[in-house]
Length: 565
View 1 (cartoon, rainbow, N blue to C red):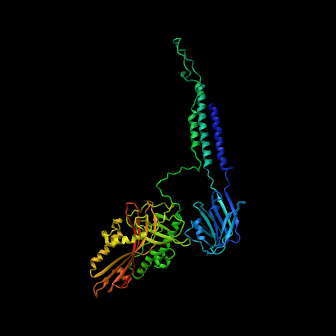
View 2: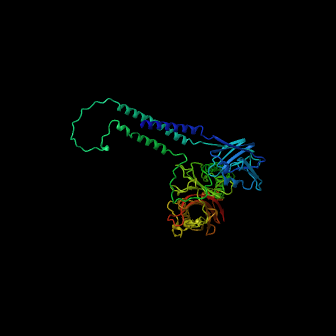
View 3: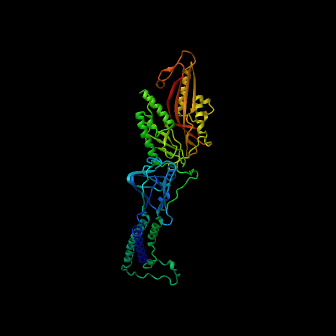
């Protein structure tokens, strides 16, 4: 019986090995699948939808050729269509009967443009006459073909699907067959030794004395097992067989995966993140490069492609002061790395918001940038730059792959609406603990509040012969906010501090500090002065019902202008 089992195991192991070899050779699918099409009278833009990229399994490789410049980009299909919008385009499809590629051209009413360098593209490749680009078809990816966005797009298109054949099933058969073959060999060695031991010569033992003639009859189960009886019921092969069965049954196909445990409290976002990490890195690198060039030449015109709103206004003011005096403070440098936080908006609409933390180092505090893309064809532009407060801990935010839900500027789900933050925070600066909003803010460690309130108190004590007026106003009615993981929000606002100082007596004047003298062009004024400072502030605002308070996470302040009354 043992020999029969050994023979069966040998044939089974041989069969498993042969199946494993066949999986790699005669049963393996073709390595590539290709489909080609020639586009007659192509429009300036050609769209290859996600459905075409997924016609076959494997990684699609786009090969486009034409005369002159050839441009190939990949991005989320909805973003790609938003960029193309109503411009003239050609869309690639597939014929239901012939299963071959076809195309449909459509004339548009909107102007086309050069798609090179758009922040919407996940990957892009440019060449002369021909371009080959591998595309990740996941996450609703589509492809855009063009030349310069004005001339006709490349006329020849080939899509090749490179199939990365999964060798896991083949490995399972090969390893299982080899393991079973090894076990068969080991089992045969033990069987051979057992047979040899059973054939040894035996001495005839003397007959034992007889006992009483009447003795109880032995049952079959009580008879000691010895000699060749044991060979018929030897189950020593059973553990080895169980091991083989365990090896075979324990191997699972590559497509089988254990579902990860999910937290029932996790908030799911219906819309995907607007950007991937690779896109964010390119955007921040571009911002840092442009800012470095402008900071060196003190030319604010160089900032226009990547800066807008408060960030642009404050840098223009800083450049103006630097040109007038070498003692004026330098602007904060923007670094492209390392990125320690990347938080894109989870949306498919515009405008879109992006928050990143960059420039982390032992020698400097990190910077949080708030960027916005107004329309599909515009680039992301920096609206706010804030330096994080020393030792501050940012709240937990969604992963970059998930993205954060945009929060409306008048959202009623927050403890305080973003539009009202400037008003109540300004009251706290002016009135301190007497303000009705004093208890809403976590002021411990708030360096901005400490500095501004101290400056105002010192001025009130020293300028006894002058009339002072402090205003804190919302200078931009577009606070940008993204939701955090706990239902709160990161809110960036632009506040202007306007200080008006008038002398109360005739023939008395008001002097200003050294930096304000540079902006004013004089040491002071006998009629009084109005100083305006810009403050880009980043707050964490909890949701309604939370016990935590509003907290300032980062800020940047700078002198904008000083004028005489």
